[in-house]
Length: 388
Image (cartoon, rainbow, N blue to C red; front, side, top):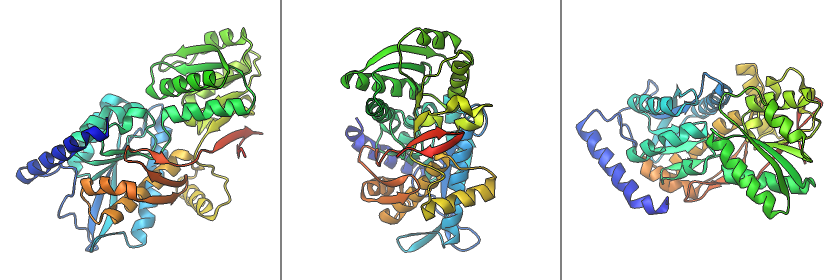
């Protein structure tokens, strides 16, 4: 689908550029001339989109904070050299409250501001909501954590994180590696992310010779999971897989403990930050979830980032903070490789770059997908630990 839209993407970009010559130019996704700042360098504007309020606010705040650190580092080091010109990075991060409808408004807000690249959206539902709009303007888009497969449907869009299907397959293979043959699932059937991971996981478990003994759904904003857990308790499940965000995982693990269930849990990358959501970390003991980042890693570059983050925000960074940080460096690499601030040139450059980031070494396919390795976090004694 993506490759077949290549010519249409170029046409859309050309149309948008032509319109910008007639109007004020704020909706055009390539370069915005005349963005000079006080230092004499030009300014390259990044429009960030993600939840800063609401239930998923932790994700958006982390991405924004991580990206802010990266932008300061780059600017303090002299900015970005693009061809024969120097650019300072600037970001305007709009709150979409993890709402598809509000995400469209947030996109329009940053475009009116003059965004030349889109960093977002952070959550899958919002990312899906704006993907057609970003495509029609032709603007370069990089989502740090929108994992739904269709987030990169169009040629202008790339992602830093794993896709939902890849997460599902990877976690199903982990379940097999751990010896689990009978697996129960609790998932959010009103969320693209949760449903996508669940479907791929279920299919791979079957291919691996395992059995899904229960697959229990819940709806958005659910807080009572006793019905689902009681049904699972009546099965011979050996593990519970929860492809959901940290707030749902916190409710589920606590209520499972209240019901006297001591089954282990596996989770998707939305679990990152779950420890801060529970009163008793013992309910999470032994849980394993997928994550590209581990804050206690001793690698110097990671330690420096964690120390800077803690100093600036009085918090330990999660994978979403690392995703935001790495995404800015990907944008920098694309600008340098393209020798241009035009979106069409940045898009072409993406398959020619490799960035060694906090979440690992990453390169990109023409379909917008990252090439990178998976890591797992295991919760032990109330702490996140790296599972080797």
